[in-house]
Length: 392
Length: 95
Ligand code: SF4
Ligand code: SF4
Image: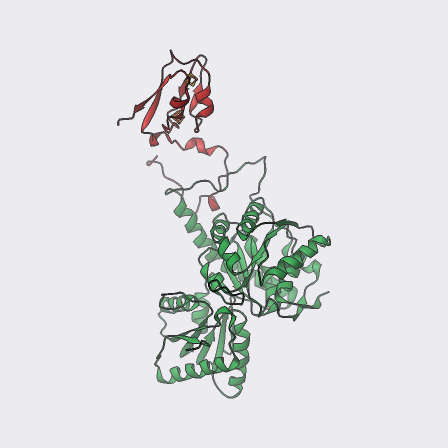
């Protein structure tokens, strides 16, 4: 039977991993991801899982161990945050390049300097082109649900790519929520055990990580481009299968009030919750506002976003990371590229918010919706890139 | 090498994995060489020191002396340096 359990975001991820028949976990603790590693090592200590837990001396080693294990055909999980993800940077590309279906919980946290332990998206955005499928959860329930789905997405032979499940540091990682967990058996039959086509087998020797120069490297990258594009279909079919066992519907993007909205806010992760709350209260007063929340950031949901903006007159894109020196910040750059490619003319405002974990209040969001409504009337964007919540 | 048609991204195994063992033998590296080792078979005492030292496994053992597999020898000169009886001379390749 499914049980309602009080779990923090970190605990929910650890709990999901416990149910997923994971063969190997290699991880290094870092705030605010630490609880994932702590909770999971407790499961190992108590004999609740058969997982081999590898204690490593750094995140670089953690992901290296995961890559090695994954290549033998094992199901593998790791987790990190911020500087830890940055230290993995080299191995992130190796994991995707060697097509290792590793699942990683990324508890988003600001990058130094100055040193800060709170939530923003600069860590994952700094690695956005690493070839991983990137999922952003809005709340603890979603963190649990996506972690389970991530194993099936990663290991599908049409994808065979690593997946990161992102949750906002502290806002989700340390927030206690009632999580509707699934029965162990239901998860077990959903994820089964990994069935790798190529494994490390002395009877069938293979070479992994061989030198690949001008004559083949380009072909390998072209394959990765195709695999991550194809993974969108894999994600959708995993979502459908998951709905069967959980009754919860997931997709590439989530929308709220988009049918008749003239103005929408597009954002990732936990901020979407606050934004939906504000949109809901404004809609009750007759304002035509909505919310677009990409669940999947890579592969980028270009078609889905273009479709969701069909009736909009203005779109506000919230970025919780900076792309220093770029015309727009990471999420907005992608949104604008998608709109341009679809020859869609739409007024867009890019808003940078919440760096280093600074709160964004419902009143800030209401102010942004009001500004969007103004733009939809005048058709004029005065400031294409703005900063909300920073002191002048 | 340039002549053969190589497989494209749709057919080549993913992730750069080589499914067949020992395929490195198909990759001839001899044309990287600037100097070629030439063995004076009269001087060679067949001690096999060069055979141990060669980083490319390019020294081949014969009955009475050794020889060099020029398909793989990269011309590093280690063999010539290590040979105790100075039986190996490095000659510049001229093409
Ligand atoms: S020159 Fe170098 S590569 Fe060639 S046979 Fe001697 S040791 Fe081996
Ligand atoms: S080291 Fe010199 S003497 Fe010994 S086998 Fe090689 S060539 Fe012959």
